[in-house]
Image (cartoon, rainbow, N blue to C red; front, top):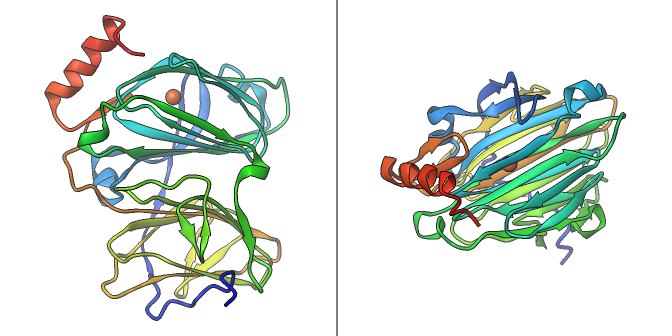
Length: 291
Ligand code: FE
């Protein structure tokens, strides 16, 4: 059996909503588009808490980077499509993020880290996704890994679609990171013009597609570029099918995860289950009790 041949879902998922991000800046003034934000989207896309897309060839929009700042209670996944960024954190981890690299940081009970561009010009482009941790894992020790582009498993379908499997399992191919509980799936899918791609998705997992090049259709509806297409949790659906409609190569990320169904209390970079836990996080950070 060729595990690279995607099985077409019997009842593919459709687009429920298109969400346009908001233009904002973070860190020391990095311009970005915040796509997942606010309690309503956090509940709808549980276990995902935030998605930022950044992309600019103007150094003024990224050069200041993200100086030292804390996180507690979740994981951050940074996918660099293009650019060079140096990461350092208080748990002693350091890494250089380059073109096609993925950085997976489990902040858990707390890290203070910085992400500083190592380029003076050129394109800086990528995504940062925040993945929640279950209540019983929020105070675990921090964890960090970066994966150079060639360490991310990928497969090519018979239709010529290239799929980079950052997390989870797609069509039998295991990704760079596997996580229990939230079971995240994170794919970067490159579709030649006119090609179609399918992958399985458990129907209770919340899922979205973000097209960042070209154009795509999902169940007859356009997954508009630079919008997030939230996929309906159709009962008895077992996956998603995406077709490229652009004359150029279409590129998109497809992200899914199992909801935690736990209370989400966020104050900036701290995401816990109760107000008391958030107050404790602020107190621990101010008193220098982060790693
Ligand atoms: Fe950060």
